[in-house]
Length: 271
Image (cartoon, rainbow, N blue to C red; front, side, top):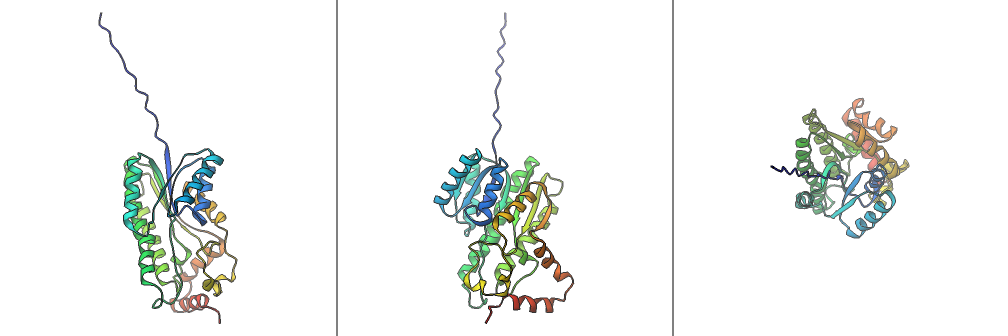
């Protein structure tokens, strides 16, 4: 009698993760909590490992999710490619990417630090592009995924004294919109988020002395809540706050020369 042995292999489903950069403070920190509350497993990325360790313990204890972290300084694009390789090596399944890490500076362009501005370009643009390209390829091959790039309302309203920062955020806007069109129909959705002034460590004492900061800044928790909602169920771009939405549309109705004079006055330090 011939005996046939059938071996059944039980395949364990891989856990899915969202990668979140700039996770240890401000909007990123609040986004981590918003996503964790929705039972999304997270891969947190920031520069300071001790903060990431604290967040890992906090989020796993409070929400019962899986949290991994990588300490990386994304002002070097090599850290971005290294992050992707490390995630792949650990065999984490990434179904969402939030490019939230960013930095800015304020001041007269000919007086601000060239080194700081080149680092800003590397973080706000180069690392964002690298992470998007690498993870998007995997998502397209699986026909599923969500990517959100955090820009700023200055992408619509480039500000004097924020010359390089405004330019980087305008890049993020153009990149996100065109990539969303390219990936339409692939199952991968690309969105972008545009907060205005937010109550974070980004604001310096000098910036607070401008007319821009007469209005009360939004709390990062409010921005994060709207951002996560847009990430998970929205499409296209989302300007956070009615006043920011209104301001972002002003260039459509006002000549550029007049608009720039208004913005220069708003961004100038009050005497």
